[in-house]
Length: 360
Ligand code: SF4
Image (cartoon, rainbow, N blue to C red; front, top):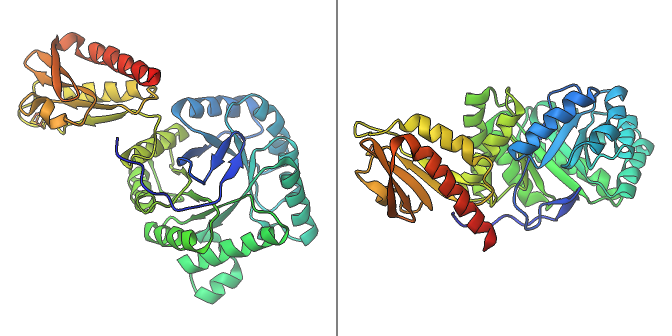
C-alpha cells in the first residue's frame, strides 16, 4: 500500500461513534434515495450501503413525516445518521430530538435569530455537529451580486458567513462542504476553504451525472482535492444506486492509499498474449474482495510473459498460462493451478492472507 499522504490539519468533529477530521481517515458517506418516511425501505437501503462500506448515511428530511421517521430509522441502523434539512428549523429540532447524529442545514437560511439559536442549543445539548452545505448553484443573493456569478471566493465567503453565525453562538462542531458541479470550481473552492478555516471538509462534486460519467467527473475533481491532502469525508453523487457511490468512493480512496480496510485489485489490460479469460476473472475477483477488510494488493495478469515480476508489489495474484495459472505471492511463484479452479484457489489464498493480516 502507498503511504497515507499528509492531510491538511483540521479540527476533529465527532459524528456518532466516528470522528471526522483531525488525524482520521477520510470517511465515506452516501445518501438514501428512498422516501425517508418509508422506514422499511430506508432501513433496507441503509443496510445495503453499510455492507458496501458506507460509514455515515444521510437522509433527506423534506417534511414532518420524514422527521417523525428518524427515531425508528436510527434505532434500526448501525452507522451514524445525518439528517438533511432545508430552511425549516422545526424539522431540524425534530431530527435532533429524534436522534440524528449530525444535521445538514445552513444557519443563514433558517431565518430569525431565535430559530437559529434554538437549533444550535439543541445540537449543543445532544453534542451533535452541523454541516454547512454551500452549493455553487444556490449562493446567497448578496454574494452573487458581489461576484456576478458563482466563484470559489464567493463560495468560501458564503461558508464563512454561515460559520460566523454558528461561532457567534459559540458553536464549533462544524463541518463544511462547498459543492459545485463544475470540477475546476469545486477544486478551487475546496483549496481556498482549506486555507480559510480549519473545520473539516466534506467533499463532493454535485450533480456529477450517471454511473460512468459521474464516476469519471467525481474522481477527477475529488482526486485533485484529495491529492492536495484536503478532505475529511466525502460523498460521490451519482444518478445511480447509492451503493455504487460507496464503491466509487472506496476505489478512489484506495487509489490514493487513503483507506486501510480495503483490498485493491491490479489487473492487466490484456493483449494478444492473453492465455486466460482475464476480464471475467478480474471482475469476479473484484467482486469478491469487496468484503476483504485487509489492505491486500491482489494482482490478476493475463499471461506469464512478464509473470509475477509485473506485479512485484502485489501481495498475491495469478498470471495466466495455457490451461493453467501461476499463483504467486510477494513476487514469487508458489504453485501452478488449473484454469478451472484458479479463481477458487486465489480466493482461498486471499482469505488466508487476510486472516494472517488480522492476527499480526
Ligand atoms: Fe498482455 Fe500478459 Fe501484459 Fe496482460 S500481462 S497485458 S496479457 S503481456
